[in-house]
Length: 554
Ligand code: ADP
Ligand code: MG
Image (tube, rainbow, N blue to C red):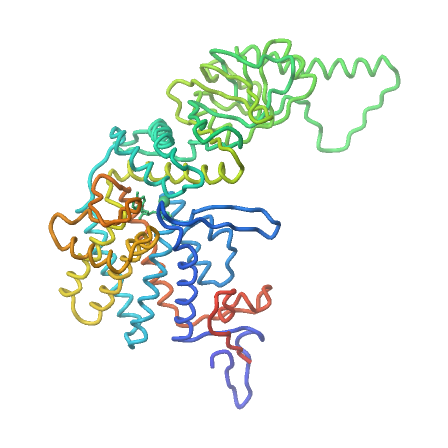
């Protein structure tokens, strides 16, 4: 026992009392069981015929979704291995914005298959090596079977967006083609050429949502939508050819940090004091006005008196704008954010075709739109209810991720499980070349990939075994590369150019799944201290997932 050491017949505690520990096969078994449980939990949501999940938080908030990353996040898993699985989804979401369910499912399946090999007394390092070789081979082969796409291939990109969003039926329904057009326009609008490469920062596509209306009322705003109102009733509510100032300092008189006392002894002094304050505010407003701005977005506050003066000058003002929105406004309108009032110059002003306030579902919003070639745009998602609008937003974010990934890597592959089938076939061939124990692991990797077509077939109500056998046979032929599961028709068919996905999403899913599987397999000792969770967060406690109990050290 490492938990205790012996010294001259006396035992010394190495680990604190109450720590738990899992060793060797127990550690691996536990981690595999947990990872499979997590993967299984989201498996049924895969694809357009996948089911949705309703998640209810401790506070009773309801989320209805099909999104792998969202489900796992809301599940609040406890076990460390489960947390690592959730990380896969998060990374996938951050890196490519789509393919989260696939990545997690694949990791779960890789681990499950590894478990079977472990049961046959194959050493973990053989499995790890085999998985590593398989991942390398798959990555290379993916490059050869993918096809090129550029930012100019609008139709192809719209197809990619539509397929990516199509799996979220709640928020998208039959409007996926309509939304795909919006997504592609938004992504290509913010794309920039830098050193011969297309760079897309999806942060500059603001996705704003508000319930009310219909999903087809969703609009692309060539500029930024700000969820704020114009501060004063007498200000203009609509300005064409707006000249916009962005201000990072307050239009208020700063109160001193230290305590100061002003003694006023007569009404006249009081009057003078107020007049002085008013004059200072008026000077501030004059500075804004002198720059030629007729709209000012202020990141800080605007004093009532300053509001009054601004209104008198016909300047529209919005206060307490979020920093992230200020940056978007700068990119959209070409304005430079001024950090002090003395810095505002007319050359720093931004421009928009129109700035106006509009009431949406009972709340005022400020539209900064018709910007010329804006490098920041907004997609304003609308739908009948809170749940639908939220899922719609998630679908649109997937679409943005997919289209950005497609443009950035410039490659796409066929979906519907056909690519995974093709990769599995390639790996089986490769396995025979490699031979030895690694061969078994490579074959196990190939089988794990088949989880995607198998799950899609199940989701369409097909007989999964029959479908897989048919697909395997078709993929043996030279023209069978694009054969996958047509979930709408519930049959095995050639999906080339029909169901397409960005290569980057596939690459990322396979890379993170195999990396995570290898990482968890390498663990043969799990030590956890008695944390605040009172024991059930440790490796022994399964966080409600079922599995062997923990092992006490003392
Ligand atoms: P993920 O979170 O992994 O993106 P999705 O629920 O979005 O999961 O499902 C993606 C899977 O569904 C991909 O394998 C994709 O090829 C498949 N898919 C999407 N649309 C279709 C379709 N129309 N027919 C068949 N498969 C589809
Ligand atoms: Mg998806």
